Length: 138
Image (cartoon, rainbow, N blue to C red; front, top):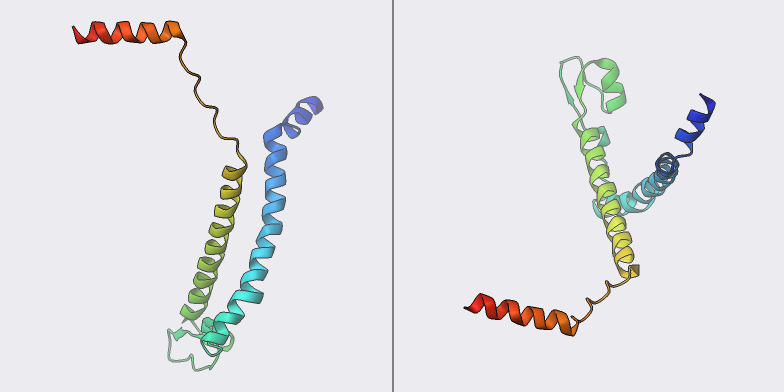
């Protein structure tokens, strides 16, 4: 049973998947930092510090608070501002990932070797082709 587990754990696909997950988690942290520390502050500066995360609609008359955290304590609320902020963050993260993956794919294509040219047909092949074409034309 131990040998079987070793074979499974050391298969190329499992190891590749583990490495991919670890790198993906680290890359996710980088992208989150890029969005949270660089892109969102710029968007905040452009929009005058507009923050949607505290926008909500109370679902009962008992909700009278001025911020989302207190409003949730008072009763049911639709936190549409928080949803909008998370959706905007997702769009930015997805866009950044798209650009990065596109660049990586471009580099991969650039590094790949050009396909070898097809060799010229031999004299025999040329003659056979001519014979075939003559037979077709009859």
